[in-house]
Amino acid sequence: MKYAFSRKQLAIPYAIFLVLFVILPLLVVIFYAFTDGEGHVSFHNFLAFFASSKTVGTLLYSIVIAVTTTLICLLIAYPTAYVLAKTNIRSGDALLLLFVLPMWINFTLRITALKEILTLLEGNLAMHPFLNTIVGMVYDFLPFMILPLYNALVKLDDSYMEAAQDLGASRRHVFLKVVLPLSVPGIVSGVTMVLLPAMTNYVVLDMVYNSTYIMGSLIGSYFSSYDWHNGSVISIILLIIIGVSTLLSNRYTQGEENGRVGNLR
Image (spheres, rainbow, N blue to C red):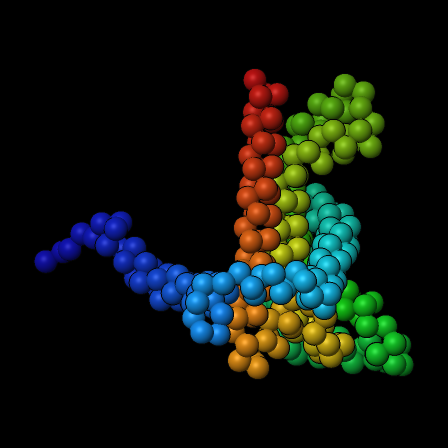
């Protein structure tokens, strides 16, 4: 006897997984963030976070690390993705695979190898903590910027660029007026995939510069010392930042799409 499963029935395993491993842990974090040691509702944890120069400084330092990493990745990834997208299809896919291959290797092993290289190049790793952190972050997140940019650029219709050139536009104007606007969804996706994780990826910073000067490390230090209230507060703050950033990026992307549709009409 054959059984026909509806979409709702097929979604039951995913719903159970979502409740057990996403919603319930999030509710636990929210509970500890908005309660004190006695379980009473309190906003003292949030007030203490913004009143402390250490935690606010860590937040600002994390933002600087994330923004710097994202800009460098974008500057490297955009021309790389453009070249890959405009080469022969087969060779472009093969070259793209070379950028993805390092992601198949264990993350800790890759950062350890990078740390040894930096040590050999600089002699003393502790003398350049910020630079080493940026190098490690860029090395880690660069493929996440290249992939969405490549997917956006490889779908561009060459007829748009040819039409612009036929109308007398220079290569610079073709890039600025045609290629760049059409690749905005890829840029937004790449920035989102790099900026937000870079604020919390403490493994790179801990391995190349043993410190808690980033939000992920600070969260880990609180939870490892069983201070779930302060750790949960930082988690909620980061969740709000991620949610707002994702909402703004989605609205911007939709606005760009609607604008392009309107121009075509």
